[in-house]
Length: 135
Image (tube, rainbow, N blue to C red; front, side, top):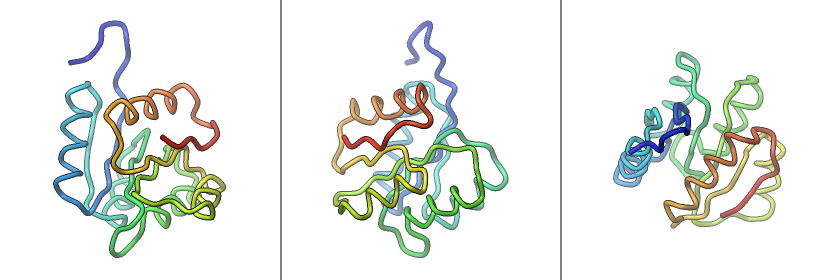
């Protein structure tokens, strides 16, 4: 259910090797009017990003093949106009710092609330070059 007066046309790519979590996040975002696609890993996500425009990528940190951090690095090195947000149950200070240097907007610590997810998305929409936030 989209809120009147709010533009909710963000194109979001959800990347997670956990099929249940990926589907749940997709359903939640679709219910709020976002345009959502999914990918099961970083390699598939990168392929999608190269052929289809997205505003934001919500990516798991630890995945087989290409990790979420490697995906953020590729987004950065290829100058893609997309805001990456990392999701993980554990973030070291080193990973958070490196992710920020490579353009990550936020680190969502799993399990995160739906409100935290929407806060990060809306803050990202308003401030595409903000500091890394952690919720």
